[in-house]
Amino acid sequence: MPLHDRIIPYLETAGLYHLARLNSQWFWVDESLLSAFIERWRPETHTFHMPFGECTITLQDVAYQLGLPIDDAPVSGCLTEFENLMEHGRPAWVWFRELFGELPPQSKIKQMTVCYTWFHERFRVLPTDATDETVRVYARAYILMLLSSQLFADKNANRVHLRWLPYLASLDDLGRWAEFVPRNDAGAQRLVSTRLALDRLRVHDFVWEPYSSVDVAAVIHPEILADEHRRLWTAVTSLIYFAAIEWHQVDRVLPQFGGVQHLPQPALNIVLQG
Image (cartoon, rainbow, N blue to C red; front, side, top):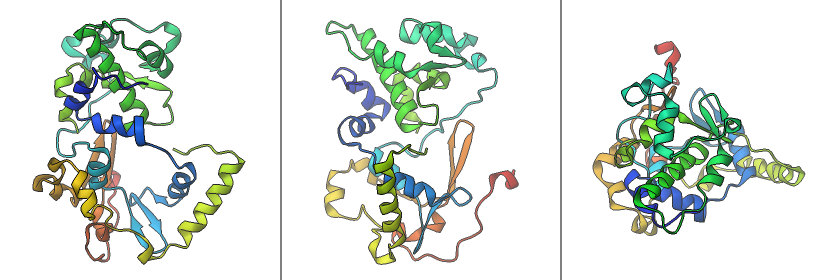
């Protein structure tokens, strides 16, 4: 979906412009590498198990690579009786019409989701004479598709969930919130090669601190390097996305922050702790 110039200010306000640029210009998925890493993922520790130890995706990676805020209100909310959560008790579809100017055809609706292709076809081209309100509508559609298909994609990536309506209602406040890939035969051969490359990795082959380079620091927004944000990179805490809660267990990957790995504590288990 094209990134229109008049939508960019809304993405900047929402804290999503860097992610949008990454998606439209630089983002390329190495399916074989992704699949090989998924095979090494351990859900009980939330880390990748490598021949030389553990590593994982940290809040530091989110800050540097996606430019997203990591220290504000969680993206959450109960989806039971979802329509009652809408502003002033309005039904979800009433609010949808107000935010996007129209409703999708019934054939494009399934429960509380809308077919991704409807958004793509309906809001792909911003009219040259669009009013400011029309631009806001297109900005909401772009952000909704970005969140559903890139940042929080799941196996139902061909559909957009209405859970995001409360966040899209006020674009100015949005900045407060902080799968297995099918392959063909050629892809299968690349996967075998990638597996072998990971199997042969040794501790000195792995770049533990990829952001320590002066060249990297020169292109990073200064806000990312503020002390109040940096302290959170090493916090053992919960990561919340609606009903999904996962642990940020960086005590198991201290070399990624220049430390020496000690014997880690047993993996946190939110079910047993609850």
